[in-house]
Image 1 (cartoon, rainbow, N blue to C red):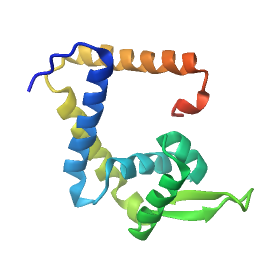
Image 2 (cartoon, rainbow, N blue to C red; image 1 turned 90 degrees about the vertical axis):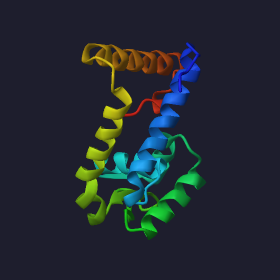
Image 3 (tube, rainbow, N blue to C red; image 1 turned 180 degrees about the vertical axis):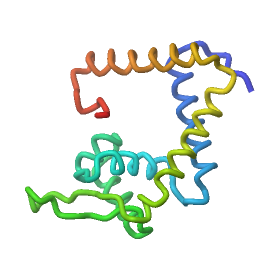
Length: 152
């Protein structure tokens, strides 16, 4: 299949959708959707993330995050814990199950990225990634919304 579009928006959208689909195809053994994996990335990196912050990071409605966390908690991927500084806040944390397979999941994601970048020379990959980072920074600045920028 070839893509005839040379427009940024459609190409980025299609590439992102296909990366998600490839991840889900590869992650069937874990029963994780791409939305669940994205949530886990933040929880693994940060240790504990307030549920409201996950809504911002994932760019989905709070009720949708709540339902996503409910399913993941029932499956043993995450747990809700009271925030030590504000008892009204629930932090989402990784469970031992998640921590035990986090390396395998990272490897799976790396393989999907290797598949996605196959046939692109390393120097071109660096240019592509730098360009996408610059686009993200430009649009974040133009929007004036620091909540859209994913903290590293």
